[in-house]
Image (cartoon, rainbow, N blue to C red; front, side):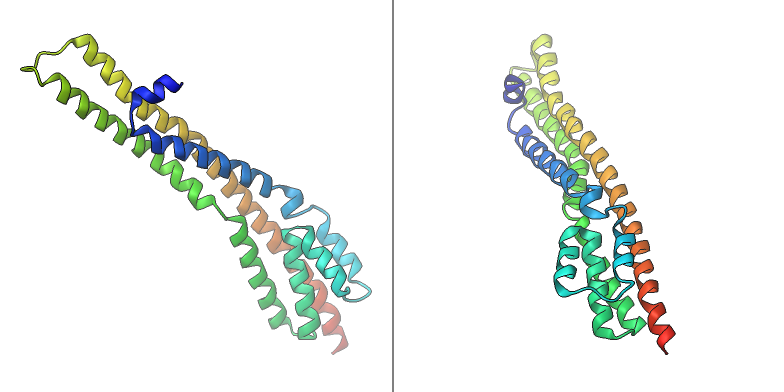
Length: 209
């Protein structure tokens, strides 16, 4: 592998850096976008059950916020319910703001991963073009006389860049699409959970009127 990288020349260096960054981003997103860290399955039901007797204390809200991303959104909703005193508009506004912030955090680094997936093939093609220019420039120096075997070998070496670019781009693109789908699914779960909480908090306030 080291000999291939050396033969491919300097244009492969950006691709190597892209591969390292892409791997780091994939690992980071895989650890972050886990169900237990974003939207635990039974969390909304537990929160609704606890709040039947009344709004929880500040310590309980802090524990809920530390539980997961969805827990943070629900905690903001409960805090807004206490401050708004049953005002549905203010409650929804606070929950929506917390939800937008949460989704923004879930999308962190996805644009960088998508950029690598798009740029890696072009970087590989650039390296191949640079290598071809160097090859034909060298072989055409002696009145156009060049060894066909050396020329073929040089072209194959130049194509290493294109191959490596695709090797970097394909997994990065697959990971980007996978994580994007997970973020969309989590966004839907958080939206549904927040709506259930709002309805749960608004009904008692409406009944007291």
